[in-house]
Amino acid sequence: MRTILYDVHCSLGGTMVDFGGYDMPLWYPSGAVKEHLAVLGGAGLFDTSHMAVLLVEGAGVRKFLNYAVTKEISDLKVGRAGYGLILDERGFAVDDTIVYPLGEERFGLVVNAGMSGKVIEHLKKVPGGSGFTYVDLADKIAKLDLQGPKSYEIMRGLVAGPEKVFEKLPYFTFKGDFDLAKSAVKLTDGTPILLSRTGYTGELGFEIFLPLDKARELWLKIVDAGARFGLIPCGLAARDSLRAGAVLPLSHQDIGHWHFVNTPWPWALPLSPEGKFTKDFHGRAELEKVKDSADHTLPFVGFDPRKVDEKEAKVMLADQPVGTILTVVADMAIGRIDGKVVGLASPDKPEGWTPKGLVCGFVKVSKNLAPGTPIALKDSRRQLKAEIVSDIRPGRTARRPLK
Image: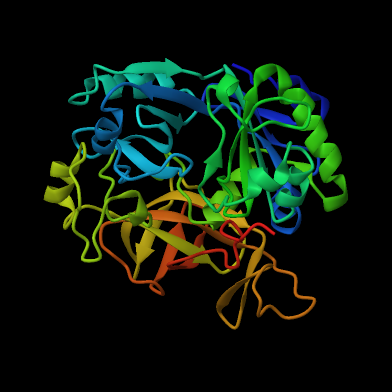
């Protein structure tokens, strides 16, 4: 399958690969490193139209989704988005999702490429889920991600009435509607959009949902408006290294057919300060049984940008294998100074300092390892030093106030 911008990617020299059944750009001639750094210093533009949007409607839908999704959404207001997991009865991930309350009886769910049909099928089988209307908007709405500290300045010139649109728009909020005909948020040419202050890079930015036939025009406008800020188009490789450095999971790689518990993403579960579940949700019973014995997913950072083969590598602790690697990438915006991980956005970085990059990602291990624990990543070619951490790329801008 192809997104509506496939020809644009080809004309820009994008290296195309299959991702979730879609032909997507892995990188452009600028290369993944420059694309990664552009998002941190200025802005980057991603085609994310392969992602799927679902509408779930009907009386009682909020209560149902509050059970079907791990995130507590019982009091999630219209305009406030929430990230959660859709689990099966075993506590395994069907997919992750961002939940958008559009009204008391209307919700939007953004799920991963090729997953809309599977998620709908699953939700209908969850207790109480068969009585709602499910509308699959996959391949009916285009989606662009504008990410980076300069994205606000770029976006201000593209929407009608920017003062009103960007007023009270903190991180993980949105304005507009997935039923674009109902959306009050419009581009300067009158095109209706849903504008979400979310993204997958850890940096300030927006996700823009719009009609398919307007995607090419908006892409070109963003590229033109962003030129003076250093904006460049970005592909999947930069998206992967940015999200990993921001400690964000990739569905079906960092979460999947194992128990979603003991992860770096506790905010996706309804947990009390004492670590107890605060609501019932699909899969809770199994997670309760295994949480003391299940594997732990943990972030790590290495000491140089070299990588290992994630498919064959083992995680070693004191020369003993303790787990496997889920994600391994190089974040080229970080380095070490006196052993401490420092990033391009770190306020304490030395003047004129340029990072050489560090390998980072996620491991799944048989026991909990405290931050600072030394590990090794070993494949058939090499063994690399690394350490467990609580965070990876410092100085991220996603939560920065708009100004």
